Length: 487
Image: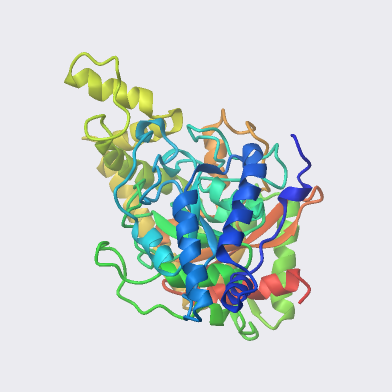
């Protein structure tokens, strides 16, 4: 590594502090953006978090914010805040590769709703962030454009699939970022990189403009350095969207207000199934320290059972791969993206374009999903998986009738070394063993730092809440954060 990791681990100023400084004229949004681009130029070659930068449009937006501030106009909630966007979300003026060769060169003509809402809130969008190909992976080693490295230890993975988004916040290459979570792709990298990552309730944030992996599971959410910052970004993203039929018509709560509420009196569930075999002892110790901190603040801790948790991984890898098989059929070399130059007829163009364009993990999941949906196997595999998925969701509903939130480890280990699990897909899939249940159930969750291992690797505590219980999870997470920061 060309530099020590010390300069990489710089915590950004809070969104509120930066916005206030810009409004008061003490900081210029253009200077802030230039500072972030200078930092990206210095450190991105080591981390590989950014795939493309959008300097021209970012500086135009920053200049508009400065003009508003100089005239004394009221500033929107994210005015001048530098934010990065995972490369599975469309953004005008920037490539959208989804980390895949098959979409190399694709320039979408429209913004995803999440990006559009960030723009409307005054955010300065720095560029597009690296990720596992089509968001399929738990280490960010599946990107066609090279792996992302963890800023805490450059020889370790940042987690996946939103590894670039988590690493960018950890290294202060953005104040906040957008990621997506299908089975843990926000929460697990947040844990590995020592930042906050939020999985909103399914339907809370529009998926319009998200390049689909598994449509009944995919969700868009924020990464930030603090719980309050994450809450403020989610408040901008959340809300009904006419362009997404699955988005919920529910009012958006003041999530940031929840972060300053005390946690005394809250009933917190601790699921036995999340503390069994396979949980690293140092991870367990850090998570239990977080639980003790909540207890010390007056939370009532209750042991609960989520008996069907053991079925979550097989259910997830049937449902997700089946939906991937259907969603990725559109990438055929006809309309956009990679088209094989070796094709001699229509059939060979389809076959060779997909063979050359898709990576090994994507091909593996397409094959698994196609098999699960094929005649004679649909009822035995896909239908059965959906039935068990319903049981998992009902189990959470029953638990939330007794508790306000559930706390558990985000991942069974801290960040593992690059290449350590690349040749063992099952071991890689098990990295999401504590996150896929919430994904299948459609509930909300987040990962908040709760300590570190003896070698300094971050550990995340996962807070899960009921459907549209985001305020509750922000409240609990802020309690953990205050305790960890000694506040």
